[in-house]
Image (cartoon, helix red, strand yellow):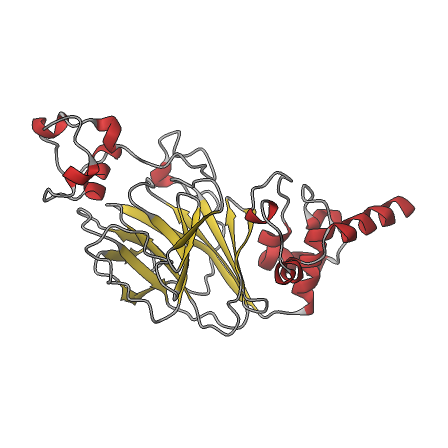
Length: 330
């Protein structure tokens, strides 16, 4: 086979591009590779994402036993066995999904088993395998999306229509086929956090527990479900955290505190709180109150903020200045 063969040529062969890539990008193959296949340009085929991981386990060859970031034991929802495409396989107590376990012939997807419609929702998806191929995505959707519609097509499935909102491993957002740059890439071992605020109608993402900013607005009144998709053979994603709670004055105060207190400080450490309240907030909204670098990427830094985004995010710079003055008075 010609070592300069491109993806278009490969798509005409019985083995599709995304399935062929995985054969060379993983070491634990189910079947040996023939000498003819060995002559393929491996550098061209190996297109695994080099995105940041949450830990160094995959660099040390310990990715299979990695449990970093998996502290939670209670989960509000899991993947729905009745709402998935044919090439999606659910395991690990319905929390982990594997896509295209033999080879890939298109795009597979799976939906969560609980509707999200009026509260605050936060969940985290861990990339448990190499991240590569045409696309691997995380997002939300309505029940109108057909999870089997792209089973024979390699595509960025989530966000192709008006019924889904997605984030690609390439760092692009997609809705109604419109793509927008949002963050850096994520790869094997990355933890992608999702915050759905149905009070304000916003969807925000986190990468390795660092906020990336508001990605979508205008979701009020919709009934949504978590969804993930992949074109890559033998690829996997796992729910490692998911919680929900009513929108309350307490939660809104936490949002304000996160805006007021310098981002490099942990809110639970910076503010004196009663032990019981502190433990409650730690168990439920630590993802919101944790420290993060001031240089954390976010799309809102590169474009003008809307009034709805200001309201959703809480107070702006003027409030931070007030906090600083109060500290100096003390």
